[in-house]
Image (cartoon, rainbow, N blue to C red; front, side):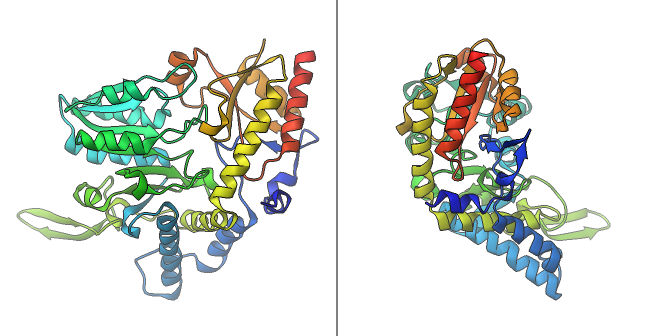
Length: 410
């Protein structure tokens, strides 16, 4: 990887913040966009803008072709069997809600259980708690060890005949810990349960093969992998999606709506994946996501992961030299992606983030939408989080550590 050449593709990296060179270490929240993605979205609105699937004129056909090309690129990227298994949604949150409200409320009832872990992002907790109150089923929580790693023995011991679906993030958005979701999926299937994988932090950084993982559902967001905001994907095995009811009603998701004066409307759903894509979709977002996938494939996902692993290892060693910095969670770089949670002694997480911002360094502060992990496992009120991506450098890490040492000396 030629990191300097890659950095030239990202216009925002050349700007200054508070008269300092921008150092962007908030990639777990959202990533920056390369010129190729920016140009693709600009080209769509400049030359091809029209609605999809509904017109026979030139622009509509062009827009539809670009939209479906993006679906095929995404299908191949995650190695799904067919494009029909790729549903475009707003992001990871909507994807999980879609499963909870459609599959969940149709298949779960009183006495059934959904199994999740304490390290989950709120988007993999709240939808199940909400639908559980409606459907009467229970959400059970598997423990996480003090170092932030999953307690596999506890997770697997909580499977029973009552368990209908297991939900687990492949990579923790707080610690970067990589979970063996393939192992958990096997246990789930052995108990007759389904497996939902939150891939928000894994799809942008790892080679993800849904068939190899044997995941029944996979949810991820475009904006965390160089794409636009407002576009994401729900992958589902075709045989499961076929049996599910639509999430929203409206245009495009229906095949026929026939009205009879005596019996009212008779409605039949559209084919996959369109029965889950009601209304005008985020066409330009999908086009941008397709271009982001192309960019990542050109660089190489293995190359990206190796770069992040090397950078994370380097950053951890440098941060250990800062007497005022406390690292949280496991520091075993072999079992994590490029995410480092930390605290600065004597400062709140928000104070630390604001001070770093004065030096042009962007990190995340707070719960990172994972309050149970912070409070129940890490015993923290909040933390700071530095997260890396393909365009970050060791020189940026050096500056980051230098500023942290200045904070400690102040």
